[in-house]
Length: 311
Image (tube, rainbow, N blue to C red; front, side, top):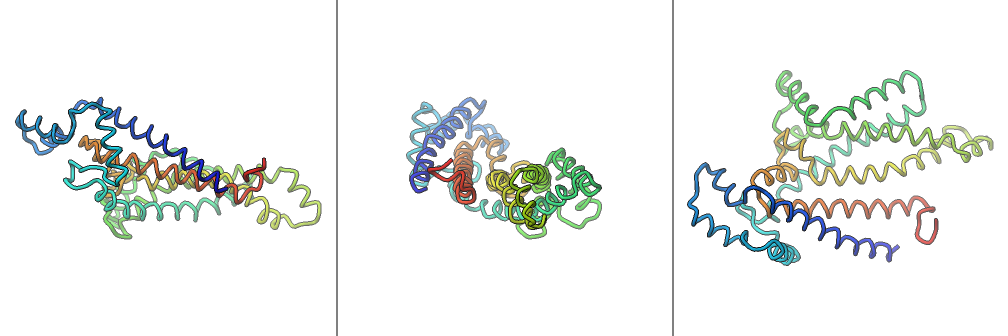
């Protein structure tokens, strides 16, 4: 297991290099640069010589490989550069935003787990009955609704019409309700559909028939064997969900003006804040690599067939 973990960690090095270099390459094709965007946001037209001097100071006129190599050398020391949008280090801005995104992620994932597992089991147990039809219909609606549309719909009803919740999310529990629900609806609907399919697939397998033939009650077979096996593939989905929400649900955070990592990334793209974009890309890459590794290790712990040294 230790050897497997070390090999997987070594594999993250080319992944991080590839992702960050590709981002650098794409940003080099942008029609403007951070200096130009800074003056445009200020509503003034900067002097050409002053702007050129700023570009030289920031190293924007250097060749791509030189800029990338300098950034990598600094990043290895924990220095991701200065944000031209906020005029302070990228690491500080990321550290300020991360706790908010983590709170949103925890709330959204908690809602997802609380609703998806019971409803997925209920839908499978009452297959092709009224409860199953209702749950499947609601899950289909949940999967079909775009997050930005659902978010605006919730704002319209609960913030504007009913005046129960704020339309702009602050750093409090009340402000987390609408974005958490918006973020969790699609995940909940997806989990319900996958869990129902997994349970129905497991129920039809030979080992279930064998256990039932021994006189073991159906509920005990479902609880001790069918459900744990059905939840195995859900682990992968849950891992990807963790990566997505910790990376910052950009659309949801933008709709609710929630000052998390996703909103920061959207603002950084608009402002051509190269250093901030690179910091966000590194964060996203580390999150997904770490989550994938954790999911693989958990799989090998829960499923003996996937452990090292065996098939």
